Length: 353
Image 1 (cartoon, rainbow, N blue to C red):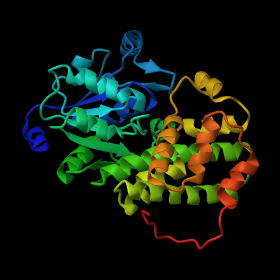
Image 2: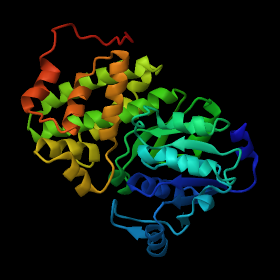
Image 3: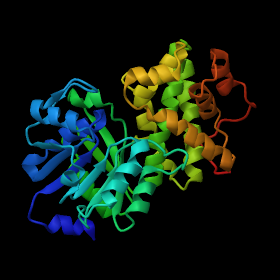
Image 4: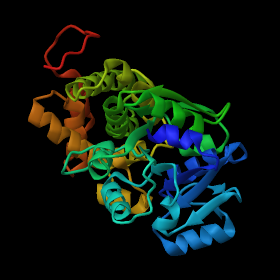
């Protein structure tokens, strides 16, 4: 078993972080705090010029403002990053995950005992695959995990605490990753074996964050936001359960926990997309101006396509798809997606039908 081989080695544990966006940079800073405990950290980014400058200056101001510890190895060479790596964190965008994974598969540098972890929150479109599914297809002999939860990068970099979920179908793998990636008093990880639920919940919350930002721009009030989050959670539950997820996961850190943070904060890029759409900007202008990826845009389309195939009622997701596709959305349309449906009883029991 991969985790047992790693635990019995006498050398340091190498963690490779693939992706130098805000979350990749933040994870590098978190894991670097474990260097005194026998962990080596390598940060990879695809842009040689950017990574060379980062290696030299050890600091950036965009997409987040931070200074890298000197013990973080920085590289733009993928072979260098993954060679001898025990844990490989995929923190590239959902759109780029397959490309990076396929590039790794073409090399002979990946250790046969490496554990692969998806730390992105999105669904590939139009294939409708989750990131862990992609990794499992390309690397069928490897253990695959998922890291998800409320992770607003700027708060973590400011030293504020959070708790997240580390999931793997093998509980021993999840516990090993928990020990490697947790950081006392700041970044607490809980284990979970429901990989499907953790990954889908973490992806779906970005869609509802877009709706929440739109609602905020339209000044619809906190009562309406509470209704949105509650009904959004119901949609998340309906969708995730049809995919084999556990309901308890939806109400955990990767579901409800992440929704509460992302749907209520201007630090969330998906919230910002919705907010600016609500102010009348076009999606193309917003994304070009932000210069970062908002995964909720692609995820909304993927989830809606999957929901239609399986006849799952998801009116809020449908509204978001319309908004990101250029359809004019008014406050009245938003209210209708929440209010103008058949009157029925509220229930906490979710069925897959």
